Length: 527
Image 1 (spheres, one colour):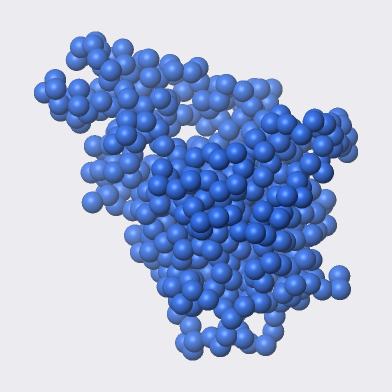
Image 2 (spheres, rainbow, N blue to C red; image 1 turned 30 degrees about the vertical axis):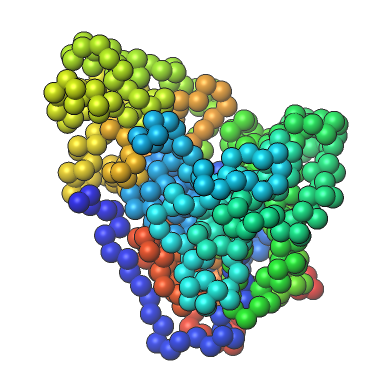
C-alpha cells in the first residue's frame, strides 16, 4: 500500500456541542485561481477592501502549501473542501489519460449527464471525485437542511469544492457568457439562473476599457460585438470575476443563504486571475491590476453579505488553488535559470529508446510529456516486464536536459517514504488506478508551455498559497508555522461539528480557534 504524507488525520474535539446560535449561518469558501501567496505582500499597501479586511481581522497563515504534484486547478479545488490528496481523491489533474476509453478525460466530464443552458456542451459532474467534501458532510449532518452551492467561471472550480450532494453548481460557458449547470443537479436550469442569464449580464462589458496605466500598462479595450470572441475575452479580464460575484449575490438573495435553519455553504472560485496570469505572468501590470480589483470585488461581496446575513454570522475561508512561475523571458532577464521545454522532446526521446531496446511499436499512449502512459498491451504481447520497461523509459527521460527527476509507477507503488518535499508531493499526487507509468518533474522555472507562463510544479512558487480564516470563533493573528491546504476541510468540519470529509488527511488548525462565547468578529455593517 502506498504510504501517504499525511498518515494521520488529527481532530480537535469540542468539550460541549455547540448550540445552533454559536454556529455560523453561512460559510463563504473563497478561492482565487492562481493567487500566489506573495501577492498579499507585493500589493498589500493597495488593498483597502476585502483582502484588507481578511488580513486585519482574520487568522493569516503565511506558510501554507499544497502537498501534491501537479499543482493544477482541478486538484487544488478538490483538495480545498475535501482535505484529500489526489492519491485518495482520484482527481490527479485537470485531465488525464483514461485507459478504459483510450482517450483523455477531464476531471468533471460525465457522459451520463447533459449540460443545462448555453449552447449545450458536454455535461459535467463530481462523479470522478472519489471522496466526500465538507458540503456533503454538512448535508448529511443536518439532514439536508444546509444548502450548498458552487459558482465559478470554470466547471471544475464550481463542481469539485461543492461536492456530490450540492444543491447546484454553476459555471460560465465561454462561448456565450451564460451560466450553465448539468442534469446531475436538476432536470432544468433553475428559474433564477435563467432570469439572470436573460438579462445578458456579460453584455454590459461590450467595449469595456481596462485601464492598466496606474500599473505601468496601457488601456485595453474589449470587443464591442456580442460574439464568441467577446465572450471568450471576458475570462481573461476583471469582468469574468464580476460575473461570478453577481451570480453569488443572486444566489444568496434567491436561496436565502445564511438565513435558513442550518449553516449554508457557498463555494466561490474567481478564475479570471488565472487566465490573466497565464497570459501575462505574475510580474505584469495585468496581474497587479486584477489583484487590486479582486480586493475591491471581495469588499463588494462582503458588504452585500453583511446586509443580508451579517458578517458576524459568516465564517470566511480564503485560499488559492496554486501559484505560478514567472515568464521564462523575465527569469532569463534576471539571470536566473529557467526556460521552455521543447514540445514532444521527452516523448520522442523515450519512444526512441524503447524502440531501440525492445523493437518498434506504439510505446506511449498518452499525449502529454509530463505523464507517460505506456502501452501495457504491447508490453504483454512482447513478454516484457512492466517495471523493466518503466525503468528503461525513465532512464531515457532523465537524460533530457532540464528534467530534474523521473518517477516510475513501480517505484511509487513500493515506496514507504520520500526524502524531501518534491518526492512526497509526487507520491501524494499519484493514484494507482488512474495515474501514469512515468511521471516527469522539470528543473525549477522550466515549463512545457510554449507561450505565456504556467504552473504545476512541486516547487514553492506553485505550492505556496494564502490561507486566511475570519469570522465566528476565529482568533485574528498571524501564524508562521507550516500548514497544508489539506488542513482547511478538517478545520471547518470541527468548527461546524460535522464529520470530517472521507478522504481528509489534514489536521485541525486549533491554534486559531477560540472557545465558544459571546464575542464575535465585527462585521462590515455601517463601515
